[in-house]
Length: 221
Image (cartoon, rainbow, N blue to C red):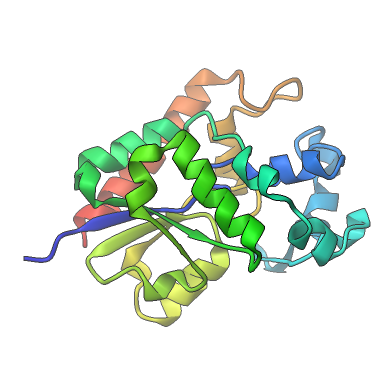
């Protein structure tokens, strides 16, 4: 009998990586004003078609090269990224669905020792029970089998899964950087003063919708 597993992405699914990256480089927060979101569209992803985006590998429009933006990040950056306020809820939900022993963390590394080592240290510090179920790789579609589900915010990964005939094994989690950004603003309860406070009924409804979608994907495996 094949055991169904759930793989959880770290960056921008469990961890608030993008906002932390912006803060690390002393740039304005992306949620500071909705009218200025176009700069983040141009900087972080470009629209190929309405509703479709693809992540870029630089923040050049903010004056940051790829090397400065990502490759120069020290270990302490990776070990201090904060979790989203809702991260624990989703982790616990996945554990109830699949059984704790069948939930894994699957994350992609920037090819530097600081990234990989920092992510291992982050899990050791914050989710130590997952240190033996932490997988760091470059090609996630090669790790997730046909009886498992990856929950991930990256549209490029979604494209990889679709191309490999594994669309049922991928769930696109809402993110500021992907085509589900409106849903991300809902779960964040976006307000100008604080993106994680207010609009509690909107947040609750959005989270319930996402949990229902995850349940459906998992049960259909």
